[in-house]
Length: 264
Image (cartoon, rainbow, N blue to C red; front, side, top):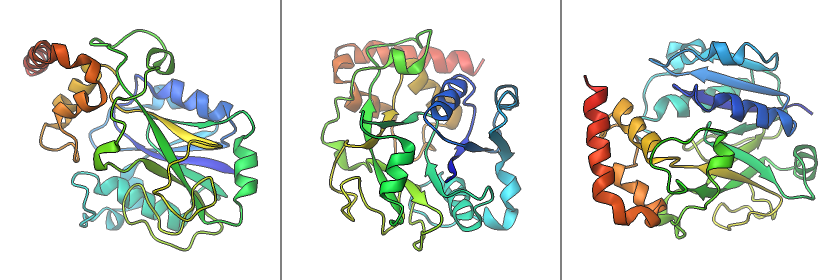
């Protein structure tokens, strides 16, 4: 079987190499990346891997990028890409994970990519649950590997209504259509239940480095605009990092200084 990842990327140069090398190391045969509009180029990173394919989002055709109401403001191109990729399977994959660059697929000690796909090969795919990680009290972006720097789980234990999974689909067996960037109805969890609501981090899950440092969190809002980053707000950082609430006022001053410096 051929295992792949599909992801839309934008200005991910800081963390892309670590993410690519990790997922190749656990058995993915190819990684299919689509640069969004106005993104910096990632070619200097991807050119070193013969199983990483770098494309531009426009390559899927203008007719597939017409904005539709997906209930996720600002995310329609991701939705459009996933829908097109699932329908066309351009790299002739058997299984494909649809994840972002801040998400790392993990297995417990008794499982691997091959074993999980063999076990569920008669299914349409899997909902992969998130384990969310916070900032580890980092204000400035630390030096070194992302996975080494962020080891503390998010303090948002009740998930506050957020979707807490991504999809890993069997492209040879899928019949349903995407309803958003996370979900195709008919998938099951790693317990075999056709439910996205049953939480399990057994067999397979995603480590989601959702905030990283306060600097990283701020820079995303500054670059994308405070009113245009999906459903997340700047203040959501503290849902995941309650251990930094005591310095919230100082962190907002840091944000204003960073924003003013960026606008110079």
